[in-house]
Each structure stands twice: as structure tokens, then as C-alpha cells.
Length: 120
Image (cartoon, rainbow, N blue to C red):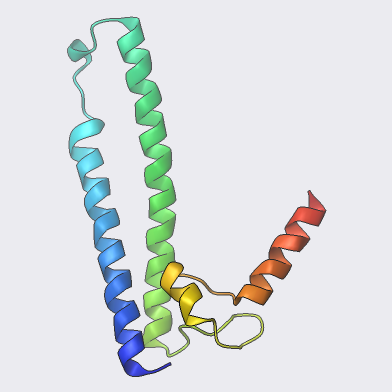
């Protein structure tokens, strides 16, 4: 892949990573630290706990995405970004624009999904 395209993807990945980290910080600073006395009754506490649980699950998914972003940034540094891990063919640029953390080309990803579907 051309150096200019790698730089484009690097900037995009860094931007996405920063947005995820900022969202996580907002969650920690705002949503998760409500004083118990602010929750006037059982229904409020229950709703708060439900929302809190949802936000924590969401942040866990985002933490995993940050890890994938870091791995993609490492692949850029190693000059392996955009190369399918299975077929060693180039991953299409349109796929990388939509999902820059992709490690499989469309054909290999579709094959993987078919196998998963058959094992269910």
C-alpha cells in the first residue's frame, strides 16, 4: 500500500482511538459516580444500575476495539496493514475504509462466517 494511504489510515485510527478514550473518560467522570442519596427510590436505583451495567458493557466492547486499533497501528508500522492474515492477499481499500481494523479480506471473512453459521 502506498505511504500516503497508510498515513491516511494511521490518522483515521488515531482519531477513532482518541474518540473512544474520550468517551470512556466521560463515562467514568459523569455517569458512573452518582451519589446514593441522589437516587430517591428503588425504581431510580434499579434504573441507574441497569444503565450503569449497559454503559460498562459498552465500554468493554470499546476497550476491545481500542486493542484492535492498537494492533492495526502496529501492522502499519510493520508494513503488514491491509494484508489478509489467511490468504496474504491485499484487503480491499473500501473494506479498510469501513473497517480499518480488518485482518481478513472479504472472501476469507465470508468463509469464516459460513463456518461459524454451520457450527451453530
